[in-house]
Length: 144
Image (tube, rainbow, N blue to C red):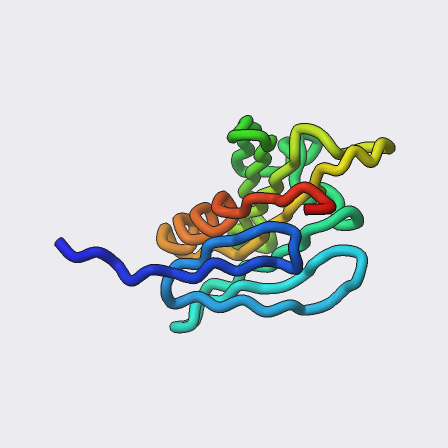
């Protein structure tokens, strides 16, 4: 048994670190009020789009559950995690939204904002990769 090559830790403009497995790269694609970008498998196929920040909103949440093939709502550490798989014109799209338990709403209490990750899923490997990448994100409280 061999140990896979280590991946890369990416700091998303101070919003928090994200772990990328070996063979993935990340680039920012725009916006000022939130951090938008994409994570790509270098060998092709999987592209994960992400949107992190105050103005990103919740791309997945319980009110969208009815439009999903399946939906999960789970506490994970100090975050709420919403995961939904939807059928988009015959293709499966997975959306993962990570929400800090505090810091969302009209009060600015120094906590971080939601993080959204979305990808079209073509294989079980794609599903595993987006889950590993999205769930590796650790939001940093604002001001740190």
